[in-house]
Image 1 (cartoon, rainbow, N blue to C red):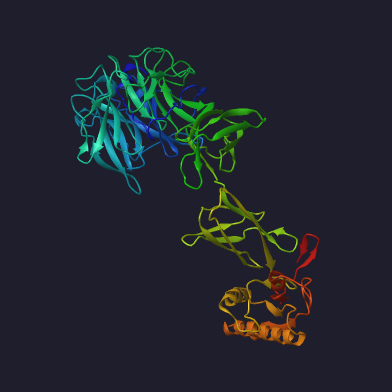
Image 2: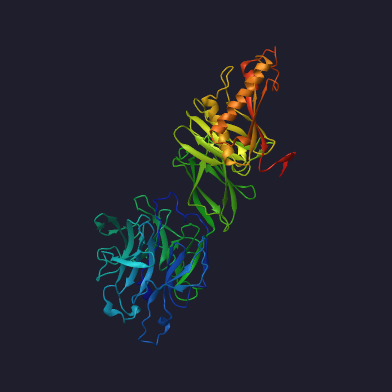
Length: 613
């Protein structure tokens, strides 16, 4: 960057989230590409990334007309659209919303506060508008705008702007309460230093110099706070390749912070400055006037050929970090790309090649193994800088919902899970499978329903249960003509036929089904065990089926849709005939109420496991 352009200052979008254990830039290969579609023969520099746009400063073409002594050329703002990977996908276009008769420096935006920070020249002395910028030492200041529905509205000037010195190059923390900037104010360590201010209830604190780990007797400029906790800046006072070079250091700066420089030919004998990183942490942009560019200062695309990020292992039950979890990452060729254990924060730092797909396997005692796909190709899903992997504890309710005829999976079956305090609703997948984390020492009631099926209830508890799985095969009866559904919990007192409250709950489920499916016509069958006389049992079963019929009618069901019949002990389901010694549980198998679907909207005929409608 040549001297006549150094006075234009930049500030940059940031996403500061605290210190990282290892910087994005450490031990990472990066490639550089010249951008032909946005650079010009003049000065293009100062990239900033705001949402899905790259915004930068460019000297207008009139600036190249050396013979025009009255030219009024200025640095103005231009933008190009970016895709998810941070690649430019449109040509440059001029921004008109903040174009003024001043030099417009690059800008940054704090999404948390809705504020935009802009560096402008001539902010103090408008009478100097007609003076060519490069011919006079014009002061710079920071102007703050607020985002509105349609445009940007001026809010205020930064309180430490001055007509005696420049204040510029701001970069704002993600929270919006820490501003780092460049100034040549008196009392600094060199020609220009980096300072920071903290926003308090009473306003911005006084500027604090970042100290000798950053500042030198030369120039420090173009700060950028990256989301990995590193502060990137340019300096000609630290040992480097020559002129302005790019460096980075942890922020906040402590006695343990170490300044580092960039490799991968990012620094050159020319000026290299203004580096910004896309929020995806896989690409970025910087400025340089090195040889081989399109013009004077050019903007270069930076791609991380490696991607460094943290694997975070957490409990899917407590949402807390799992310490000491084993993490293995396998590439597409079956080779181990990374392996290790999560630290005291549940993190493991990994570095993977971009443009590849991986499989991650995380495991720890008392938790189920978790297997996830990592796709670092351009077509893959975005992988966060802190990639969270949730492991299911071994208190897990899982299983499959199937048609009782042939055990055919029932997709999208709904399970309503009630632990007495909270109710959760989950859905089975296309294979009828489901999984849900449960808690120890609780009683659970689960209602399972599906379209065109008769629902059921499951009761279980985890009282005294050790970590593990509760696995169910849930079988539902279809509501098709010919289906016979054995109702559970239809009990009667000895030798009686009145409907007890517990039987009423089961019959209420049948009422709901008949209301939901008005085409159904059914027959109620009542059966007894073999104890008692044949005629007595026959009459008892008829009275019981009639009681069930009357209950349905009392709930509003059309009696023409329901038949009822008693079979006594004529259709036993086991050996417990007259004179055979059986347990009470075996006799109970014969005391049952069966619903047969006589007519439905769809009649299904089966052939093996294939159903024809």
